[in-house]
Amino acid sequence: MSRNRTWPRLDGSRARRWLRQVAALMVKEWRQLLRDRALFGFVVFIFTVDIMIAFGAPELDLHRSPVGVIDRDRSAASRDLFYRLRPPYFAASVLPEQEAQLERRLDRGELRAVLTIPHGFERDLVSGRPTDLQLTVDASDSNLSYLLASYVERITAAMAQEWHERRDAASGRDNREPVVLLQPRMRFNPTMREGWFSTISELLGMLTVAGILLPAAALVREKERGTIEQLLVSPLTPLQIVLGKVMAMTAVTLLGTLVAVAGVMHGWLGVPFAGSIPLFFAMVALFAMTAAGLGVTAATFARNSGQVGLVVLLLVMPITMLSGTWNLVEGMPPWLRTAIEVSPLRHFVQIAYGVLLRGADASEVALPAAKMALLGAVFFAAGVSRFRRQFR
Image (tube, rainbow, N blue to C red; front, side, top):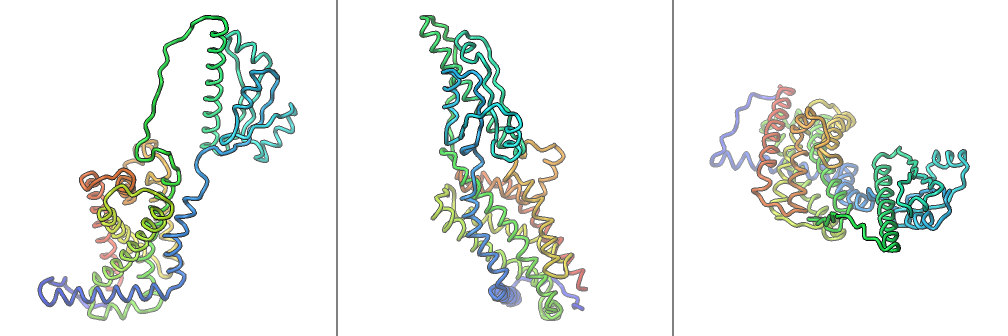
């Protein structure tokens, strides 16, 4: 249906006319976005309310975890251990030795763990003999169970050390052994605020969704309304059509990021912004253009908004899960670490955390930015090529 077209020569009046046509198409896309209440509301939500929810979500740490204690020794040492399992990390309670009741409470999630203190616990501590404590942990949440077991282990080790020192002081012996003291120094996030990490991670995820979904929705909207043919018979090339929509939605993404970072994260929630503002937003624009290439490709596989939503979901889920925002890339198998290099978010994660928290400069983010730009060029070229073939 479309006429054969050649690439425009970007010189003189033809270049200015070509750019004016793209600008007109961008204005058209902004007006359509404002009229689309559902999509506009979604954009506002992901850059404001969603960021605040991520900041206020429960931190990945223990907080008054319910732990039951079976005290078979009933001694000063067992009471000392019991009182060390105190808030903010634990909420300990003494339990009767009724196996059926304990099983039910663990099954219902009323207890995260049960610590059993055996007979002779204090006697063994005083005499210096080793003693065993049994900790039964609900490991349905593997991360929480690992933290709980680690915290209890540290508490019991510290208590045993204190009792040994007290015993040596009472007997007049000096059995002190060489001790290595670790003095950690936390950089970039000295207070270990989980909210800083979670809000940035959520922003990166929403940027990925917006970068892919908005251009895809803009193209599919033309198919649904039957106006794509009108655009193709107008004095516009397929490149102008795609570029106008991509640039318009990239501008929307940049505006949303400005509201999210400056207004919500930094201005309201106190998340730091240590690096260069122009550098960060230039990288956001590059990432949005890169993701838009995937959005254009997704739009060529969909005929309506419902289908494009499914295609975008299929793209966003693996990109986000394998980006390093919520998991450790180092723990992945080698073949998967190689495969995720084709994910633009994998490289943008390094840039975003580097600029926002570590104050990285342009030289430090040059390599991931180059990788992301290369991926963007490939995705965008593939999307435009497929779009042109569809309407020949």
